[in-house]
Image (cartoon, rainbow, N blue to C red):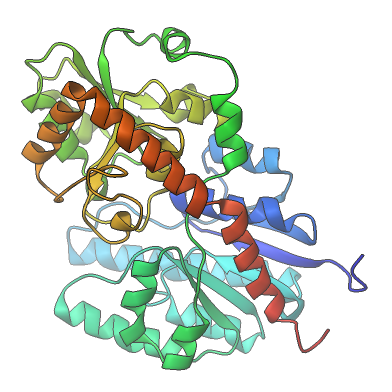
Length: 405
């Protein structure tokens, strides 16, 4: 037993949407609970689904009365409104954090350091030990990137500030933005899977046919699944364009599993494709636990994620770990897991024809499906175990108190 009292880790995010970043954090929470008091702060009005997952883990949940405005900002007025909302939200978070002894706690916050540099500077002055995970590199206009680089140079020199990179590609691309010493200290804590959950799903005895029957999915269809937020950077319209390209093949169906129903505007655009082979499914209506959601993955013959911007997506790794042949794009860190025609199929982002061709190739070649399913599962289980990544993160937390102990 440790001679030191339990310290607190506060995981915090300030937006209502949730996805891979939260699943990544929950992996660390599960491992940390043995030695730490774990608090999760998130906005009131967050999805009951993610709140339910946190309750299942057994962490303390604090609800914040503010949330970031992520709605579109097509004009100067909306941009100023969103900026004002961000400042208001960060001030409310600073007020909330006053009840914690930040010098003897860890704060792991989901935030963009180059946007919230002033907020991070205040945390540093308060003596906080705070961590931010970066999932992909900075991108934008030349002017914007120059400003962001200046801010990154500033925040990387703040006392108590640390970065995790959730893949090697991101760490490599951070290098020009920070000092060599700071860069060396960045730990790669991969987005990963929980092999225990994966094995439980594969060993629960339910066949693909039974799972499809449970979810009212035609047993005879060749089903292509995507999982994630239904947003542009995930390649949603490329997915639909590929579905349209393959619409004459009545044996192929497409499903997108997402936490949030598309907006009326998005639904109108979906309808414009005239697809009979595509449907949206809500994760909240599909399963109440992570295991139930992972079981739903098994309805798929192929998993496809045609993203434009990604780190290393958890849903892709989970599909591969479940032995589902997968297609994704040659961007950012995805090639760290998907080796073309070995552990999956890589296409270029924005190429709906290539996505349709890859789906058709897998449909027609059972041996290829079997090969990349087996290779993909083996690679993910061997190299992307969340317990390993979480222990790396926890070790970095402990370093903050090494001198005191």
